Length: 172
Image (tube, rainbow, N blue to C red):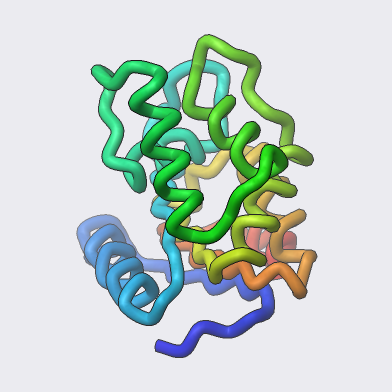
């Protein structure tokens, strides 16, 4: 798999039980083996706290975090992840850190979009959105903003069943 430097949104539709999550796992492995970074976002999973996008859950999965980690452990894992990507700076770190702490105010779409765009510019980034048919309006809005920035190096792969036509048009 060759990673391209422009933003791309790809939709994969399959019925339940047809292996969408398995496909997402296989894609993530290929992306990472090719030098990219993937972030799996389970859009159909209920979110905890004030963050309705599923990004916090995806970041927790990526960092190997559970409910028991102390704040300093969460911050240390995020810092190690960002350092490995060569992505430093408060405009990336702070919105992602705020997202990991449900006791603080969740960052806005603009702040998250900027952080993910800067992250993708530092290192090719693919967002794997599983159960995209259950994605919140806020997540679709964020993805639309990200897909509109062709120079960011970000790719979005939607996996779902009966993806709404309006969503597909919004992200193309």
